[in-house]
Amino acid sequence: MPPQKLTINNTVHTVDADPDTPLLWILRDILDLKGTKYGCGVGYCGACTILIAGEPARACQTLLSDVGTDPVTTIEGLSTDGTHPVQVAWQEVDVPQCGYCQAGQIMAATALLASNPHPTDADIDAHMSSNICRCGTYTRIREAIHHAAASTSTK
Image (cartoon, rainbow, N blue to C red; front, side):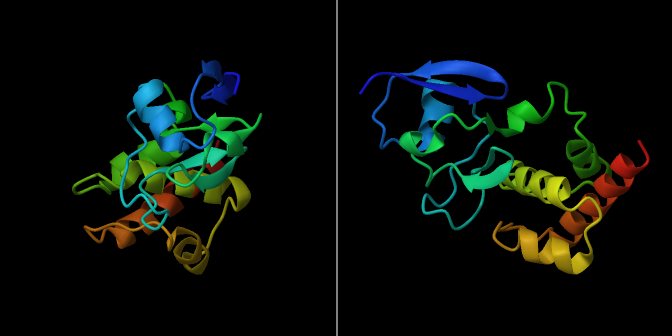
C-alpha cells in the first residue's frame, strides 16, 4: 500500500504503515503524540478517545485505513498552551487524580459541548458513560463540563 496522508491537529502527515494498524499506534509510535493513552485496547475504557471529523472515536479500535481524509484531533491539538475551555475547566475544578483517563475524558467532553453547548447532568452522564475513570472523579468531571459550558457561553 502507498503511504497515507493524515491530517492530525491541522498538520498533514504522510504515514507509511499497514492499513490495519490501529490509529493509536500511529499517533504514539510513529508521530510521537503521546497524549492519547492506551488503556484497555478493546475500545471499552475511553482512555484513547480522539476526535475524527469532530466525533469521538477510540484510537485503539480505529484502523489507519478507516480514517480516510477526515481530520483527526488529539489532546495535543485542542490548544498549544492548555487554554482550551475544557482543559481550563479541568484545571480549575481539579478533576484528575491519577490523570490517566483524562485526555480521553477531555476529548469526549469537547465533543459533547460541540454538539450540546448547554448539557444537563443527564446529558453529561449519558455522553460520558463510555469513558471510565478508575479514580471515580465523575462528579468533578460533570462539574468541569458545566464550568466549560458556562465559560464558553460568556465569550
